[in-house]
Image (cartoon, rainbow, N blue to C red; front, side):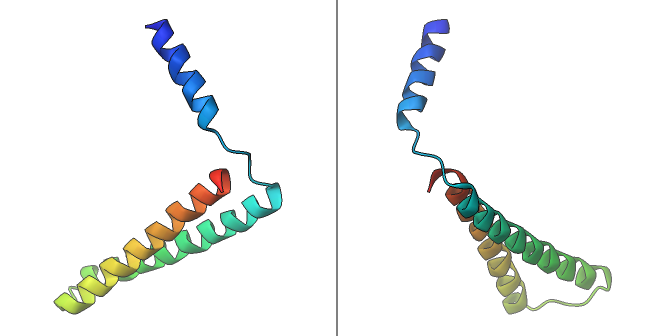
Length: 85
């Protein structure tokens, strides 16, 4: 089993790219934070509407889900760029 992990570690090290400079990493971190904030605000809006038993139309629900998914995609992209761009 130890040989497997040694080969795996060797292959992972070969695939590594050069690290992203700190300044660029900070910019990506800010993008991540803003997208996270927008995601949480969207989720809070949905929660408030659910607690007040406000009826959501299917269109509103789809738009809200699409907006949340967009924020998640932005966060994933920012994380990837922070470490591997």
